[in-house]
Image 1 (spheres, rainbow, N blue to C red):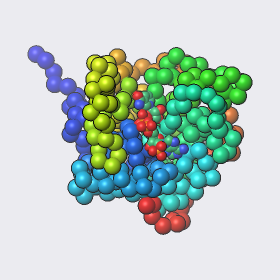
Image 2: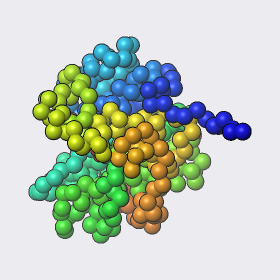
Image 3: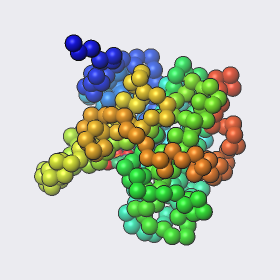
Image 4: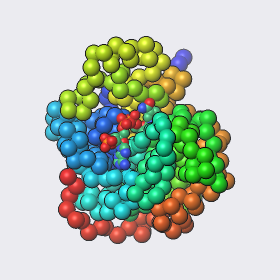
Amino acid sequence: MSSAPLTPPWDVHRLPSAAGKSFLVTGGNAGIGYFVAEQLAGTGALVVLGSRDQQRARAAMASIRARVPGAQLRHLPLDLADLASVRTAADGLGLDRLDAVVHNAGIALDEPPRRTTKDGHELMFGVNHLGHVALTRELAPLLAAAPAARIVTVGSFAARSERLDPDDLQSARDYRPGRAYGRSKLAQMSFAFELDRRLRVRGSTVLSVVAHPGGALDSLTPSRAGVHVPTLGTRLRGLPAGLLLQGKDRGAWPIVRAVLDPHVQGGQLWGPRAFGLRGTPQLEAARAHMTDPTAAGHLWDASCDGVGVEPHLALLQGASDHRPRTSRGPAR
Ligand SMILES: NC(=O)c1ccc[n+]([C@@H]2O[C@H](COP(=O)([O-])OP(=O)(O)OC[C@H]3O[C@@H](n4cnc5c(N)ncnc54)[C@H](OP(=O)(O)O)[C@@H]3O)[C@@H](O)[C@H]2O)c1
């Protein structure tokens, strides 16, 4: 006699209701972040698109509204390459609690020269990692004010083969763009696992979870008017890659599950089922170097230093530390 599964299988096309909740997706105006926002909007939640460009954010919101009637959406101006902009962003949310933030926005440069953020950090490390560290710090009171909030960090398979150089985290001595990208993603993942360990020690209700999209190509991604309209030629050229990889709509699936599935736990890694590259979401084992507490401890201190916050408290405020922010008006 076979026993029934304890929980129903996760269906990426039938997501649970999240009405009454609010989620922030960085880079929600394009790529995987757009599809995360679109899928989350279908749950009835308020979805805030963190984006540095108002026009692109508006186009994304129009596209989502065309597919999800009644979608509740806002735009939050956010430039992760400018820490001053990140510091004021949470005030602009106009919320008194946040149920999840998805650290999705990112850049991948493929050729030199080494570029830097407004604050002088190597661009990929600065945007992908440090910008999100600063954002986490700003959102901590809002996350702690929700009953069981999640910080979902978007990692990458590119982090599997990289190692952090504790003496040169920002590739100042030896800059190779592909490696710097992989290291920035490893830094994000390592930091997210360390964050969850520290949150658990403090008895926080907030979870830190990592999810990655596998390999997600624009050429395999369905059209969205005003956001992404690949030409026929682009589609045809992308077809062979479709045997191994997927579109960004599907790349969003593990991330959306990490936000919504009540069975997801802090410190977990979620990715696509088939070779970690494509398919429906499944729980993955993180590699040892991603969860190494010594490397993560060093990264933690350097990251807090990089964004100018106190290493021991600022990212980890508990609910008792929460003070509602004075709103500067709702996000656009
Ligand atoms: N695609 C893949 O196969 C793959 C694989 C592994 C991991 N990932 C990760 O998945 C995430 C999304 O990737 P994607 O392929 O969807 O990339 P994408 O299509 O290039 O979209 C990147 C998003 O990040 C935003 N962004 C870039 N710099 C920013 C900044 N300074 N401030 C605020 N937003 C900024 C972009 O905004 P603008 O429109 O203003 O440029 C855009 O919304 C990234 O974290 C990436 O590392 C992707």
